[in-house]
Amino acid sequence: MSAPRRTAKVSAVGDGAGARPGVVYLVGAGPGDPGLMTARALELIATADAILHDRLIPPGALDDARPDAELIYVGKAPGDVAMEQAETERLMAEIALGGRSVVRLKGGDPFVFGRGGEEAETLVDAGVPFEVVPGVTAGIAASAYAGIPVTHREDASAVAFVTGHEDPDKEGSAIDWPALARFPGTLVLYMGVRNLPRIAERLIDAGRDPDEPAAAVERGTHPDQRTVAATAATLPAAVAEAGLGAPAILLFGPVAARRERLAWLEHRPLHGRRVVVTRARAQASGLAGALRGLGADVVELPAIRIEPRIDTPEVAAMIDGLHAYALVCLTSPNGVELLFEAMAERGFDARALANATVAAIGPGTARALRVHGVIADFVPPRSIAESLVESLREVEVQGRPVLVARAAEARDVLPEALTERGALVDVVALYETFREDAGAEAIERAREADYITFTSASTVRHFTETVGPDFASGARIVSIGPVTSATVRELGLEVDVEATEHDPDGLLEALLADATRLS
Ligand code: SAH
Image 1 (cartoon, protein in one colour):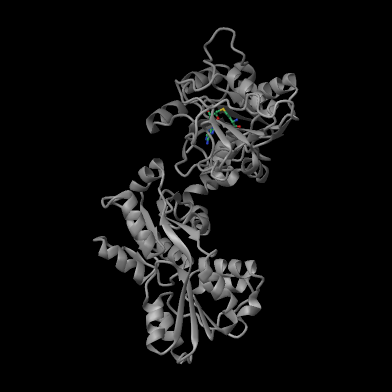
Image 2 (cartoon, protein in one colour):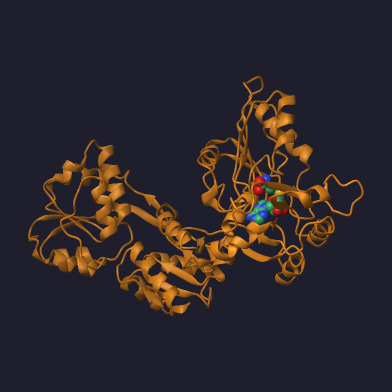
């Protein structure tokens, strides 16, 4: 996901000439799991004028960059030189001297095999102020995710980080292999998979115990992390057989055997399952985060995007007359948020709803209301319009003004049923939903999914339009409830799992039960 949004453009030259130089932040992005980025890294990414980034940064790391930030890819894919190191350093200094702030984003930690030291030196020479933001380095993170503590009271009182980049047979090697063979602790090798056979041989020849536990961790902390455990002597063959490649770290030391008891990643209930989340990005994070926490490889493919429509004369009139409604119905958490935003803009707060009976379509909507100090009077047992209509039977609406605040395009079940009972119904749109164009990479990953989750009828329609009808034939479809399921079936697809509780938590429970049953 580190594809450049824009390619390098040295427009910075001369910008704001004479201005105070911008700060360059040498920022570690961590080993790959977006959750391991530091709070400081996220803060700086969100505010930087320019971001120069490598290939090995977590997926989505740049999602919260400013829309006008210049994103420059300076990494190297193996075998291809995107930008020379000197050129990167020059560019970074140049942008900063033009008065703009720069985040130099690197995988892991910037000062651990990241050339961050050299970059900092260039900045000192150029008189550019800089800060260093450490990151979680792969040697520690990949080990931890593999269930291997790099130190242990009984097994290792020291740990060495070593580069395995260099061919150990090379004359004049910078690495003292005999010293490493004698090192009384854990050896963690970076960039060493390619040279692994020669590294293991050199270590053993120099006296390292061939039966010492050893391990290799490929793509540590990513959803597709793979670990191979063996001994110093057998690791090369085991790694070759499993087909492990870069990026991977190698570990030598008794701690590697601790994995037998401490492996935890593989034991999470959704480990190894790819799950597509199709909610709008603004709402998806809760569900996506919960799925990730259970070990799923989450693909966020927001099928819809929500655009507020609260700056309309219709909404203004509705807000000004809010106190007059006998019943106010809210059909989504978005609706609640935007209603309160529109109220605030016109100087109202929750008291504008003091006279009304308030109905929420489901627990998520009721929760959103509670945040704004309003406890819903009605929340139907099932989060669908029909169920809300049913719950509202006892509310006297004949001849009384009723508000249904919702999305522009929505089913008319609720307003129609209320009108039939003599209510004077105003339907006011607070937002519109649009199709969100997904990136090609996300679509490709979605095609290989084990589960696709749908949280509303509109996500089903938009998703199938985006990805096409023959997506992920092997995937199981999980629907939040009957209305969404009906839409899935209308499109000729089958619903494999339907949530009993029609909210994201209920959907998660249903998916988990299904995955557990199938495993
Ligand atoms: N500055 C980085 C290291 C850069 S060198 C850090 O602190 O982590 C690149 C090497 O880091 C790779 O060859 C590999 O050995 C290791 N590496 C980076 N990401 C990794 C990951 N997710 N899992 C395993 N090893 C990783």
